[in-house]
Image (cartoon, rainbow, N blue to C red; front, top):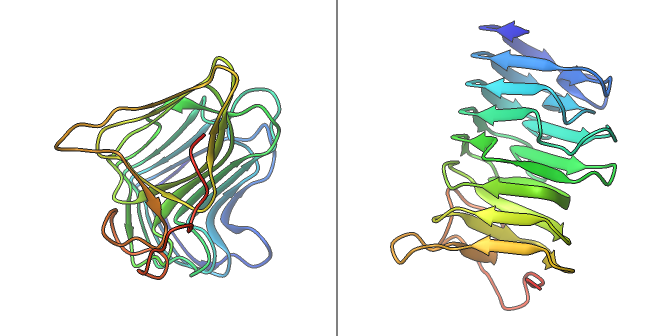
Length: 219
């Protein structure tokens, strides 16, 4: 448990200022400042039992929060909260938040990444990668776009709230009875667009010059 701490000028190696290395580990990080890292702010090998709430994360050479879940016991997101963090000035080739499910158990959970703000990030997006397991629901409360590369299979659902902006590098694949539930409204449409499109989403991403073919497809 880390609360009301200031952690700075570290990150030597290939991880971050805070590293959760054990796949059975856990972290509660609240109301703290992480700044000036040679790598990430938070780097975790587990996607379980993480609460990262109300922190300021600034000046990272790589990601603000990076989770590569190597735990095969349960889907990523079942016991994670990432809320109300301000993440700024991460590395130009990196995202404020990047989450990879690495053991084929999938990403799951309802609105567990909310209220986060990204500022002065070249890729001002929350990046999620791999398969959906059960119901993965993403809302529009973050001041960052979603960057999704996901597969939604039989019995699984990806739900996007009205107003969500998804900026794409590749594709979203829905197959075998999976469901994409993307029901916007006239006032709050759900937008799928290129990472180079500055018309939608908070902050800037990509070149600002979108072109047909910048990304793949929804299928």
